[in-house]
Length: 402
Image (cartoon, rainbow, N blue to C red; front, side):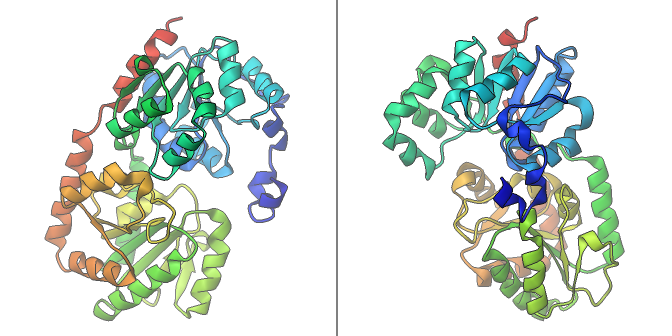
């Protein structure tokens, strides 16, 4: 943590919580404990949390995360309606300290964050554990199978698993999970909830920029910004007034990307500087947190990163929910089913390199009518695939009757 904090000082804060020491915090016990490791899991959990709050008004909710960015997103999206703390390391006495504070009716773990001591301690204290939005990617499944004998021990401590897809269900069964403890409910990420203020801010940003076409490249990783910039140079030749909004995935890379832009000798501004975007500005560096939907709301076309480099991709449904045509790279292990669905419907284009990224962006830049049609169809796809929240509520209901 101290090493990480040299780049991201937020890791230095609240260090005692990592050891299960919460002496200064006031907890609301006898509620639901939801663990969402970082930003992506928090975003997916928010619709479920709001549904729980609506249905069980008197039951408090405690949310734990591992990362400061996840903690920040909890504050931004849920404020004081939940209690947030960092989950401690998976050491028995640390976990017990937190459980004594929360005294949860049940624990809901987002996706597949399986910690042996956490699961075993909950089992020993008769705390039901539900894995929500569970998935096993092409990359992680072989590793789990290699240690199947150990994974089976953890699976016995889990009360129920709600998976994203039938493939995920079959993989959990192959690992040895009891068939009576699992069902396919769909992907919570389809339950996208967009802050109206972010939409308004995005429209205002778009209006302030004027008639210029905007490409938003979001959640980019090391090595990917260079590829995006290569594509943007090609796009800029055909549309010299277009604007790129570049948003690195991790805050600790904001300064590095700013240095890269300086080396490239492009005219850019940092969002955090609150400088005005002038006609000479070609790139806005999105070096703030919690404004992704605002950027997408200002976009004509979006590129979702973590996909031109072998990361596994990021949430393709966020631009789709706003109705923005989306491009992504081919490294999509974490969003395989969603990518297939959106691609089949003609709402997503998968590219292999910077040249194809530029080519597809130019195609969509040519026709506002096509962009509008693609965006409207994307919203319909989201509506057709909602329902995971209600199914998970049905699973948890038995444990929340108080």
